[in-house]
Image (cartoon, rainbow, N blue to C red; front, side):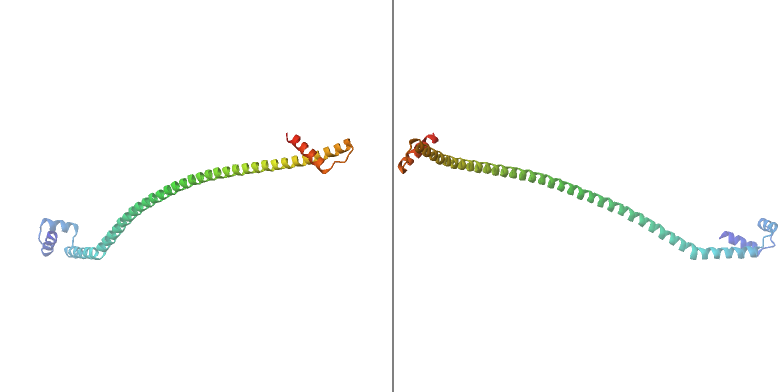
Length: 185
């Protein structure tokens, strides 16, 4: 403000021979033009500050706030991503443990089933062997009975041919019993 007063004093007293007036005259300063330019410059600064500088500062502040908010959001997203990855890792670990347990259970069940089937096969094999032995014993008994009959028939035929007589039923029965006792021994 003192500069304006000084300039106004210099304009009012253009004929005064002060050091400022002397320098201004040497440089060809027109005080009215200088004063009008200073006023124009002041008005221009005021208008620019009011209508250009303040809105630009507001836009810059809004951008600064948006960037800060974006950084906060990005940091929050990083935290959420890390939490989601940790959760996914926990789920995968749980699934792996569960799969391991299921595999072990399946192995145990397969081993148990194999043992049961092996025991069942052993029992069935023993039953088959027992049935085969029973069948063989029956077959042997049948063959022995057939053999006894055949031997008795041959003995009767041979005896009747050797003795030259026809054997009656009682003789045939007696010879059959003697042959059966000798074969059984």
